[in-house]
Figure (cartoon, rainbow, N blue to C red):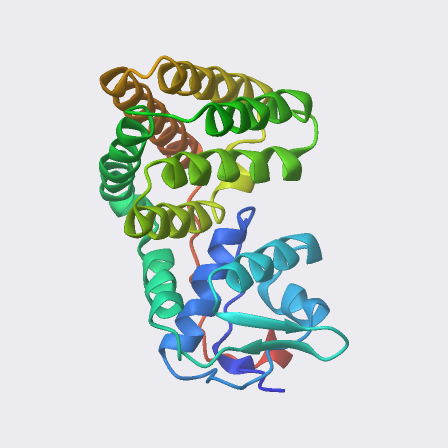
Length: 254
């Protein structure tokens, strides 16, 4: 197991798993942790970063989604070999997902997923429309189950992309949705946020069912811009993490 002990910084007020994701990514980029290395245990990481184990658990799950870590039952989590261009690309996108370029991400999402919604509404099959509304109904029914709600949200967007019948759009939209999951757990817990998401998704579904490409494009773009605005507001309110500790200070002195 590779510890990287002298390089792990204690994160003050790290209420976001994203902060841990960024810290682990930095260790990998700097070559302190290399492909094939096993990272420290959940308990040890929680101690070193100065956060709860649930925060570490969520960060590790996000890195598994990004293809950066591989979780092996009974053995631990390991740094993946960057053999897949898609996964390494997703990792880079994940690192780009930060406050300073959130606008760029939202713009990209609006362009890609807006076009997907437009194409999905051009000649939607009855079956595809039925599945779209079924996903929306599932979201409504599981608003109190955050993980299910998050999964339904992702599936809704990927289904729209599939309806566009363009494999490249589908892959891009699916990758973006996976990256967005890094922020989702901390930005969309509020009840009023979920209500807004449900309403915005309904507007998209209705436009697709009406076979109105322009309305579908507008509804999707409006939804993504609104979601980006909500996330930006959340990040602006959040107390930024400031670390003045020496990253090379031995763990025994923490």
